[in-house]
Image 1 (cartoon, rainbow, N blue to C red):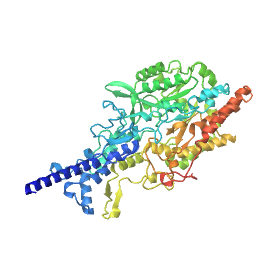
Image 2 (image 1 turned 90 degrees about the vertical axis):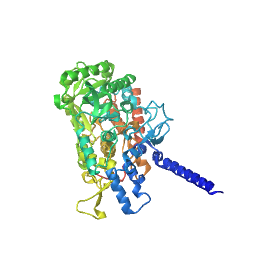
Image 3 (image 1 turned 45 degrees about the vertical axis):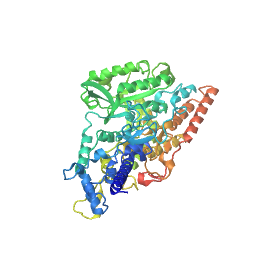
Image 4 (image 1 turned 90 degrees about the horizontal axis):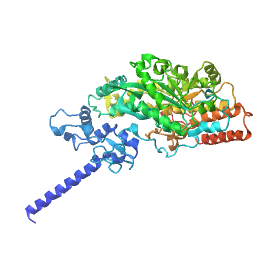
Length: 614
């Protein structure tokens, strides 16, 4: 073999080796998204890319080194986002090199957003609806929402009416299961007008703490705030199918292309205008002709605020234009207060008269023009513990005290022409949102405490917020990352209060009762509330056993059992024997459903859950 031939073979060998090496690099580095097997883990990688950047991107002058000094230098370079050199190859443009992963729901795969044809097997390339880029949009998990609704719950009022037991009962004799911030399952990436200040503050804080290295892609901060605003996973149709009969509808007029448009809001605007959701509720009610639904219209859940304090910078004319559209959509279903009264008219009569939609409107006079088709939102007596689960001892005491006196309170509220509502939600707080933002975007970064140079002086940017959470044993390294985390922790303790009151009512302990309606967060399939640690969107959290990840409590069925007991014992001789047996059969069916999701508590103090506390 000549030297020329040998050189040629050697060159070919080197070229083939280099090509193979490059192909391996592309397979392992350009598509790290393939490692993720669920929508939540795939889309969470979108945020945790900073850690990936440190692990995978090596600065040219540090390649081949692994000593601690070099690694520290590399991390310093990465934090700045680029080097002090001017050579193009030395630029560390990690926001564009990191793996931005998207979920392909049809094929159940995770792939890089920068693939030439991501999710090509899932959809037509012109259709983006089958691509999930953000964690917020992940569907109910880990088990998808079934094709069919649960049994009984879509028509529970009709089933109770068939027994004849409601003939002498009014709507305020019953208790309605409800949801809080009912439309937050469908928020967009658009910040509601007037609510963008906090997002800008957090974004500036992240930029400062990272030394300028943090470079958020479009939509990242907006999606983070959606996760801090999302209280529900199920659509409004699914909520109604799961037995919900009280809808907390938050709305505000927003300027879009210089035109007035109303959206549902919770920091972010809804994806659709409010008329879309009104029509969805109307369509459902047309399919369920014996069901009564109550809707509360307000901006931020204030019963008494009026004028600019309720809807800032919105004129009475603008409010009443929307009200006219609302009346047109629900025409033939709305309660007419001139002939029907929720305190006096029996439930079957309200249904027969076509008065099945009960609307509570805050800012009643300006919003509706004192319309007879609405009730004043100020008539709602809303009991809610503001601190919620973060001060659970006080919250549990307050909730149990309220439920222990609910029977008397309901009577007083009814005599005043009111409606009792019990809020069992916990709002996010500024310290929780700030800690969550640091963890999501800067958890890879460490800074030195002032005046300390040793390794002991290094502290995580995700500083513990456990001192704010008044629950013993909470991990110093844990803080609820999203509003659903807070909601499910809150539901863990809410189930104790609801179940305890239910048992007292069954034992006929004087005073105990349920309000005219509850509303809370985190509704799950089958009329349950999720108390486990795995979020409703499938996002994983630690749990002592697999079963506790998705533990649920029979929220709606517990309220239905209360209603059936009250209806069937209110006048046991007032209806025929066969109807009485129908009533008892219905009670047995609800009891069996309730037994599927009993009160379930366990010891997991690191995540704020205790079996024998408070």
